Image (cartoon, rainbow, N blue to C red):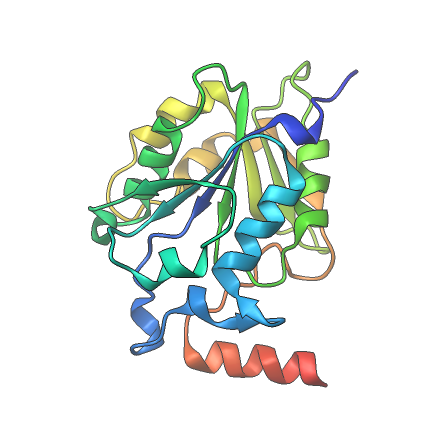
Length: 206
């Protein structure tokens, strides 16, 4: 069985959220290894594929645009981002190349994920199989991100409403999902509060 080369698939980076729990800070602009988290994630996505990297962003003006200056990506404005993650998912999927057989969906707020993880998940994609979803998982087998969905799943994601992040769609496709083990908890560790960031940085320092 052959696998689609990982370098051909488009990637949708979800980066239009409001960081509501950060008490005035923007989690996607937090420093990770010397650069804003958002820039790091987009840079890694670009390294993992030669396909288009589509970034869903809030309406300008916004500091996230400045953080991405010089990066090679397609910007998709999400003026209704406040309605929930579904708005970003739908606009990102609408921006995909018409012939895309599948696409990676990458939340921008997982600071431990890097290009190697993205390449591993992309490399697991086998379009000749019956699978419809490929997704990163923790070492203990808990499903997480990033995830790749086949084109036949796009419509289900576009029917989402509000802050639905696709969990129900993915639950229904559990039997058609391939989990790809990634080191530690990096497939699920997101940082939503200043306390989360402080704890994460303390762990890295130690």
